[in-house]
Length: 435
Image 1 (cartoon, helix red, strand yellow):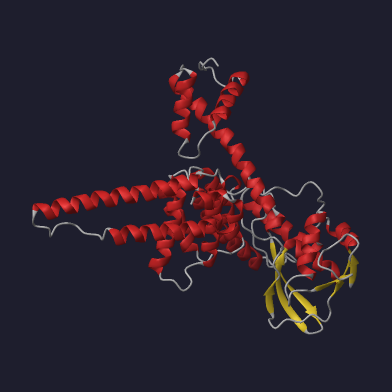
Image 2 (cartoon, rainbow, N blue to C red; image 1 turned 135 degrees about the vertical axis):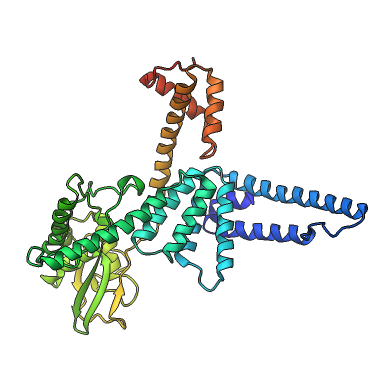
């Protein structure tokens, strides 16, 4: 197992292979020591033999458990990250053809692996990010399954693992909010004229992953019709919640639009960026990359990905044609409305490139884990010192390690740096140890 875990080349199948190994070990233990209560054993010799076998089974089970923990702990952070990614794939796929009992057993196996990793904060960070994406993009196989998994993880990791609860609650409240907005539109259609069929998820910022505002390289511009929809909802929302302010995250938005081709009308579901690009072709049949960049204000790399999905995606989704032809989108390219476009389905979706967790997202999540660990260490140090008032450095280190270990294994050098930093910043009036 250590060999499997330690090699990054195995990352994509690391967890599945670990589960296969665990099942093999569990089956081997069961075959060697069949389950028995010993209640039907009558003679002392039989009972003694049963007790010996029972003790041997426990020792072997413990050896398997320690082997799994040692193997998973042999590499920092990566196993926890890939457990979360494996769980994401399972939650997207759902029960499928397996029975409810089989699927429940699979979830139990994955949660067992979570308990074996020391880097539980890494698992939590990746799990929360992927849960948010499943919920917002409707990629989860079942909301009931998600609620059940949240409860299982809370049982394993403690009540602090509550962000999933808030996420689910936010979506339920958003559903009620949208119904109220639609009711207001129906009662006063003139006031909401041109606002369109608009829905929004209003989220508690602290409970969701940090979705950044569009800043560097962006000067994003909604089309007038889309802007009216945003403005109408924002104005209505301000009348319902006067002390709240909406901060829009356009990278999470989707649009369902009707597109007309020579072959007929189609209903297409796209990302907001894809929709803004396509709407530019209402005015012109052909536009250059530079012209699209100037009109939409979409950052260059994101615009390239967006145009790639619209012109070079799978068959039946290429609503634009790229000139010159090629596999990559370049700033010198031009794009033409594909009048001869056809699709067997009237309704379809054009997936955005890199919709799943990208290398950049993975890097950012790992970086955020590092930042969060610094905060946890400092908060723990201050809390312990406020309670104890005065203690030696070694006793403080021992106390912090004991407290923090349930989340992640703290680095002693980093811990000492945090103590030094707190002393320099004079965070607390309690007596910190001399270094």
